[in-house]
Length: 189
Image 1 (cartoon, rainbow, N blue to C red):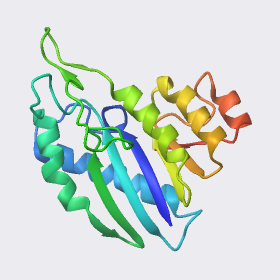
Image 2: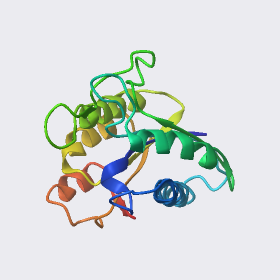
Image 3: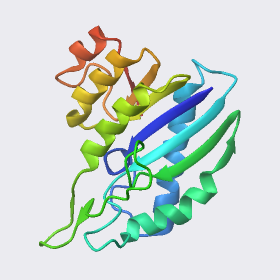
């Protein structure tokens, strides 16, 4: 069984300000453990877990951010077996539908203060793309209300949406009733 796990990294990590690569590694372990725990009840025999981490990874000039470099170095440590799950992590630098079209400027540095751009849209488009994949399950990890429309659309397209994970408990967000009515129940990190 394949599970496509889409992770809104900056929105879900436990160390909000990473100052070392050890902080990044701790975040990754935390996220992978949460995803594996969420999958176990439905798929106790495990399977393949393809995790895509979304964030501001590449600036306007095509350079990886410091965080992206730390993540690239750290995801090697979480790749492999985690109990019955084969974890295959990757940074989302392109749409899943167009994997060779690396998008520049997901991190904007040209004005004061760093800003993410296109990240929520990439997450939403990929949610729909993976919802259309037969034979796999979709797991969405984000605590951003901007993801609610694409989460609802993905659920409508595919009943194989396994679960949605976020920081707030189910029932705590303003659109949880409509999500619950359409079969989306959030697991609390």
